Amino acid sequence: MPRYRLDIEYDGTAYAGWQRQDGPATVQGAIEQAIKGFCGQQVTLRGAGRTDAGVHATGQVAHVDLEKSWRDDTVRDALNAHLQMAREAVSILGARMVPDDFDARFSATGRRYLYRILNRRAPAALGANRVWLVQKSLDADAMQEAAQVLVGRHDFTTFRSQQCQAASPVRTLDRFDVVRNGEFIEIHAAARSFLHNQVRSMVGTIKQVGEGGWTADDVKAALEAKDRAACGVVAPPQGLYLVNVDYPDP
Amino acid sequence: MPRYRLDIEYDGTAYAGWQRQDGPATVQGAIEQAIKGFCGQQVTLRGAGRTDAGVHATGQVAHVDLEKSWRDDTVRDALNAHLQMAREAVSILGARMVPDDFDARFSATGRRYLYRILNRRAPAALGANRVWLVQKSLDADAMQEAAQVLVGRHDFTTFRSQQCQAASPVRTLDRFDVVRNGEFIEIHAAARSFLHNQVRSMVGTIKQVGEGGWTADDVKAALEAKDRAACGVVAPPQGLYLVNVDYPDP
Image (cartoon, rainbow over all chains, first blue to last red; front, side):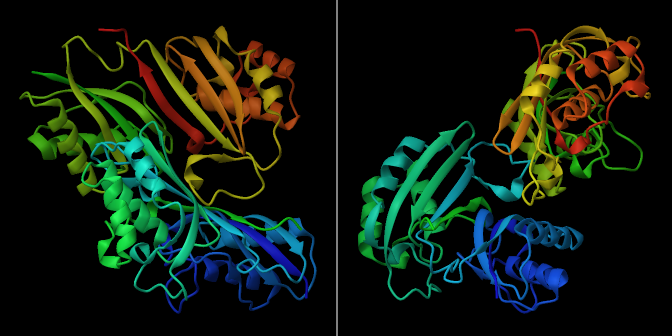
């Protein structure tokens, strides 16, 4: 059975996250339904990362095995036609046939996330569901300094949801950068993999540094506590975007 | 009565344009309702530009006379609170007291618009109501060259809605620039004032150049025809943003 890689963009607002559930609308469920509409197959799509309810993606990756082989562009355009008909906020950016040993989840060597804070008094009228509005003025330089405390290989128990099912709380954070861009503060995070809620927990914590309540030393102490209770606030989902999944060159 | 200038952002998707109407929701109507909620006054707000249904703004300007004087920040925050309660996609970026001779419409010395084209095969999942999806690959350099034909003082009858109520079809287009930015093509237009549908008519016409169907000479001929029937397609409203209104330094 030919295997296809799908590159996927979605607005997570209306979805109960990536992973298929009985009942609520999910991104995985929407694409599986489109595949059924296209070729009649009832498939299980495997995604690189299970984004939470309200989290967006510009570069999610998934794979699926189809019974028949199709031109790459046909798969992309047909799935988009079905998604559009169903009024889903999901778009297939690209589809291509890949070797059978490509696994969207296990072949991935890195995940990159972007977190967007809108830092101004006035609410967002454009894209309100796609940023975290923080009305108190934030010190992006102080946030950047504190963010560097978290880069590297650490036990991230403090920054991990209590629902996290990963076997180990140890992860290597390759990048955690805070950049001010006008009224926006953009936070870039990269790692081979992340724990559940890790990016949102880290963002919420360094936001407290930006407000002046915490220092970089407080972030260090929170990390070293290895205790979920030591975490700052958890940033809300609507500012988070899965922007890229890395794979080894074929 | 103290006069206030309001700087306004809105997502035009759910509105029948800026101007108040009996029945359909409008941006002007939403803000007038918020003012009534704030201070009990039934006012008429004057805006710098009447955007059409579906057109957005990041820098609309309006003025209003209030019976009482308030701190600028109080006006901004109170109006935003009322707009948020009413779930309007409208935000007051700033409010400030201005001299009585400030008129949002007649004092304006320039208007700037941005038009965003998403130029790719896949539909927009994020912000689908905020771009024009053009699936055929566009030549932005050819569009930029053709756009320069329209810059300057001309009779823009070709690029003017038949509903346009302006006394003269002559306008001076100060800037009309086409810039590719990844998958987006951004078109910047500036003039003292524009005719009704002028930006969308000009954008639709140069898009035909980008597709290869028209040349810069065809655009010139269309301009010189001074005939609405010579216009290319009219670009849809959802890609258009009123980004700035200029006023003389006080």
